[in-house]
Amino acid sequence: MAVTKPIIEIVNVVASASVDQKLDLYEITKKFPDTEYHPEQFPGLVFRLKNPKTATLIFSTGKMVCTGSKSEELAVKAVNIVVKKLRKGGIKIKKDAVVTVQNIVSSINLGGKVHLEKAARSLPRSMYEPEQFPGLIHRMLDPKTVILVFASGKLVCTGAKTESDVYRSVHSLHNLLEEKDLMMYD
Image (cartoon, rainbow, N blue to C red):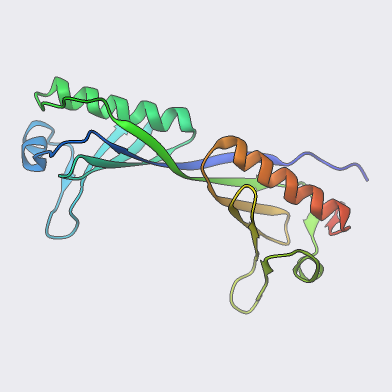
């Protein structure tokens, strides 16, 4: 049976950023009534964008966390748009934001089923307890990611810092599953 190429989709990029100055979140809510700020529940203000569809948490320290983008590039773009909008709205921000990707979550389809019991026995740094969780948890060292492997051949890869790390992790695991004859194709 022909081996299929994994289909990889990036579903969420989490990036941190900082403008390296204190921000008055009350002032931001006055100028941007669409933002959400409930300091008694959570110390950050939520600034949502429709394009790219993201939510950026803004803290009074000037630190930010952007979630929801589908690529590293869009995460950086989203933070820069937020900073630009704040400036346009009269919020004085001296420096441009420095953005760092913290985590990339992706969803993968290997196109075949995985024999989880055998995989648990033969893959290093793997854990499989079906009574607790239906997937095998595989910890990869290089790149440092965690991949959840399901019998259906679907995977979730988390912990990557770059998109290329996602691809390297998935292809490395897929090759390992093939080598150890742990994949089944219809």
